[in-house]
Length: 97
Image (cartoon, rainbow, N blue to C red):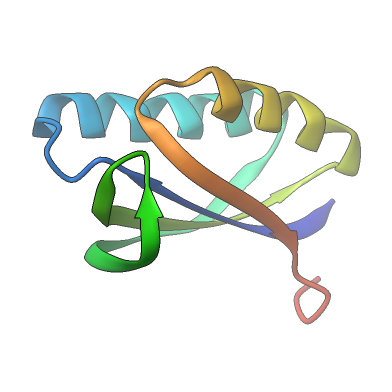
């Protein structure tokens, strides 16, 4: 298994229940693909560098996890179809085994 980082943000005006449900869905998707979540770091609200979908702020969360490279496609698919997630990026971490 390889180490990855997932950084995503949601609209900061959505309610806490929706934000928590989104986070839970991501965690479930990673663990269903035999991944292991190492750390979840909620960054909170941050100003965006430029306007995205009429938003100037986003509520960011960083997820560090280990997964097989073949499961990243399924994780990406779930992230794309989750309406609450505005943008995301998954990056492999070569500094961590």
